[in-house]
Each structure stands twice: as C-alpha cells, then as structure tokens.
Image (cartoon, rainbow, N blue to C red):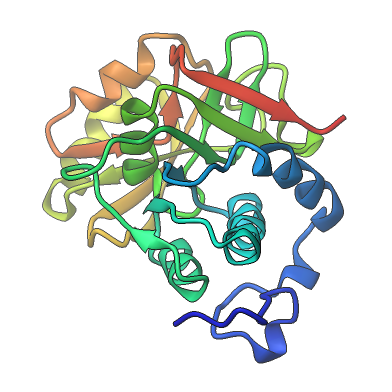
Length: 233
C-alpha cells in the first residue's frame, strides 16, 4: 500500500507496531539515519536492517523515495521492516535475484577498535548476517549507549538454534565458556533463540559457535571488513 501523503511519525494512524515518538534516544537515531539518506540513489538495491534505528532510517528512506519518485529495491531483514517498505511503495527483492549495492543496520553492542558487533535482540541476526556478507558496504548506525570497551560488556549473545537441538547446543556452548544461557522463544524463522553470556569474546568464537550442529546463526559479527560504523557525534 502506498500513500504519498503518509508518514509513520504518528503511530496513532499507523498500520505498524513501533511508535517512533516513544523510541528511546529518538532524536539521536533520527540524526544517525540522516547520515545515510544521501546514499540512496535511484535504481539501487539496499539491504535494510532491523531494530528501532533501522526502523527510523527505513521511514526516512521511504519518505525520500516518495518525494523524489525513486525506484529502489529493498532486501529487508524482518517482517516489520518489510511492511514499512511496502507501505512506502518500495519494491521487495531477495538475495537470489538481486545484488545489494549497500546495506544499513543497527547494533546492540559495538566495539569500535575491531568493528566487532553483537546483534540479534530483535531475533533477526540470521537475515542481518546474510545481508552483511552479501553487501560490499554495510553502515552500522549506533548511538553512544551501544558503544562498549569490549564485546559482551552489556549484552548476551543471541544464538538461533534448530528447536530439537536446543539441549545439545546448550551443552556445547558451555564447553566454549558460556556462563549463563537463557531461552528466549522463537525467531521469525521458527527456530529457537538462546541468549548466552560469555566472559570473554575472542575472534574465533563466532566460527566456533557456528560449527556446533544445530546452530543456525549467532549474533556475533566479528572480522567483517565491509562494515563502517556511524556513531553518535
């Protein structure tokens, strides 16, 4: 559905679930979103991330698309972002038929020195990781509350797991040093999700977690050279 005079800034008239006016650090996230708006060009295929910062960026991109009558294709990482794109008349693509020109996303934690991230509080890290590995450049938008001295300082690591493997995966994660494992429910892909605390996160941990049979994906984003972190001033 496309409505050239609509905006999602007033959720009382919105079809969607997030009230922008109630988003924490809304003004900062709007400022971060503005930093990528000029990158949107006609004909591009863009990877759209998940979370509240990406939500705000999606709204702003949608408004630009309508104002300038742009034709872009979105590869969304969640149903929520997909609905917002469709609201603004943005075509939805996929990684089979489309190649991403660039992508954007947020993060739950960002370690600036190594450009390491934890993502997945919104349970979409599998599709988020697919977008990142498929994109030549991904802009990660983070306010200062997400910046940490070391990864795992504030957040547990979300891990998406095939449901029948939850018990086995939990035992294997303990062998990797997991200290606290909490089951959080299901992802959009109908897989289970575990939130896991590690005392120390080293560069091989992402690969070690992914090597466990039953693990679909983790919220660890380590050693990705195509990431550029855009932070709050």
